[in-house]
Amino acid sequence: SGLETPNPFSHFITNLSHHHGVFMVAGILDSILHNTMRLVKKVELGKQF
Image (cartoon, rainbow, N blue to C red; front, top):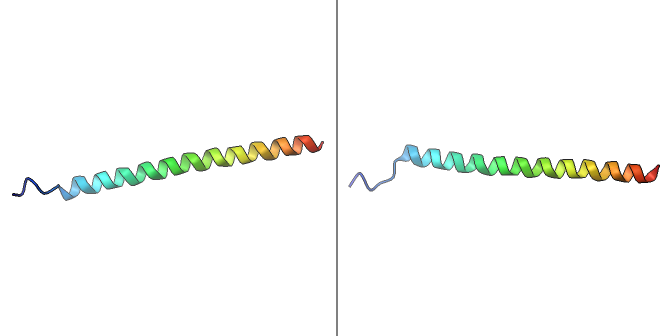
């Protein structure tokens, strides 16, 4: 019956939010990595002088 088939629109929204979540996590990880590298560079520069 038609009720058993998933709604394509809700399926699309679920996929969209899932991908958005993945991008959000990737962005957060990228930001953390970037800040860590900057901090390491700052510490290394501090050691030189």
